[in-house]
Image 1: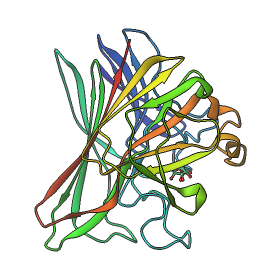
Image 2 (image 1 turned 90 degrees about the vertical axis):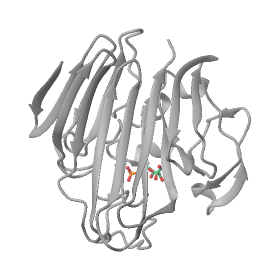
Image 3 (image 1 turned 135 degrees about the vertical axis):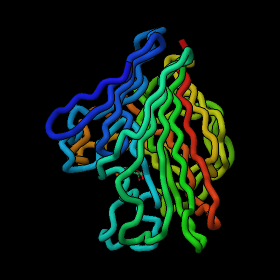
Length: 279
Ligand code: TA6
């Protein structure tokens, strides 16, 4: 079933079926929760201090970065919003369908043209809740000139204990934001024991998040050219909407386009992240 609820001025889409339950905020077109029925374990992490009133982007779940990633649109003066302007606007629920494989809802943002990105285009978000959670963000150039954009599904995954977590399936080099973008080889095994902010430069398609040596969640990416891994560690204490100890229970694994994707008039591109619980 699909139902709507409201709280603190925000609207939410609640999905419940035989496979899983999920919750999506229309503010941001932002998935907040995915709990598979098979093990009843939440796969996404939302900060207990997240602003759930529309004042700020929601800290946790699946923020949508578009049409730029962080401040990579070429203006670092802080005048344009970090990660673009879709995650802070109210989206519309356009459609919902249910079949034997689960529930699919389609959402659309209220605008796609704003300061820093003045092109004709359309964006739609499809969220499928079944055995897996699948989030697909489609961008179409509806204008007459080409444009280039970046995007990410900036997912905060819930993990029981970051100190016992391993990321599998990532290889190649990454750019280290914490070291002036120095290019370094991906560590093996890939564990996290300090602040981490990396753009992995290969189009990683399959990543497994393992906790206590047990595979917990598989992350499949399509349409990405890179993968971002972020955990703020102790610097979480200086992020006001982040629980200072919350970094113990999350890791961001972000299916992303960070190298600039050009769309010719009439062209479409889809970025897809599939969250596959391993139960
Ligand atoms: O994806 C990593 C990142 O760009 C980091 O550099 C970090 O600051 C994080 O996202 C959160 O960004 P936000 O604008 O949501 O505070």
